[in-house]
Image: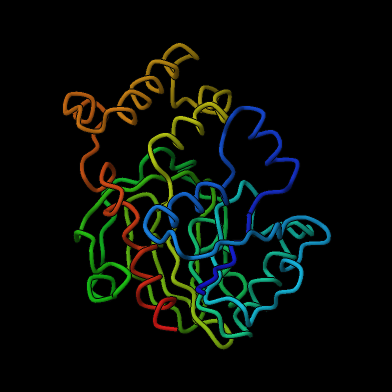
Length: 279
């Protein structure tokens, strides 16, 4: 039996608030994304941001074929337990030789764990869609991107970014907002395949995020007022319900690299095929 361990990036309190707004947690959306393509893989969750975080009872690192780090609303450079404990757990997984995949928060804590640097992006939040992500020569040749176009858009939400990769890491992709949109980071007895965006997100998750962060989005000038945000969110919800609606897709500026589940999740699926299933 193939088993993966997912580390939920947010605290229990944050997850409870999200559920109160009917927003899926970061680990829940990852479970849905992986299970849709690999229903026979067993998926366990570790709540690394909380005191007492541990591998499920009776299991050890050796019972897992891989480790997945979800997104988070935390800041990787903060010296608080919710952050430092997740970095320590990642180091333990890497010491145990588990292949690792991470999105957004996963890229950031992997960079710090290996000696890199993360900081607030002076351009502000990249949210909704990361536009025109460009693979460099290394990215175009890397198996993580074997089913992606050279240039693509992807769901995203982040304030922070990796500003310095650790020694030995390989940059794979960039865009105008963040130079480091994807990288491979060697760590202990493993390596982390990681991206700054969220290939696990679907349009419904973006709708939920615009609910969770509605006040921030208006305050930061992404929308003139709440009514404008709701109108945009309603279009996203309508396209989520009817991905074949070409008019809505055109209005929102999205195409198959976001709308097709397998294409959008291609990095995760490639990691599973290359690093998890062969083991």
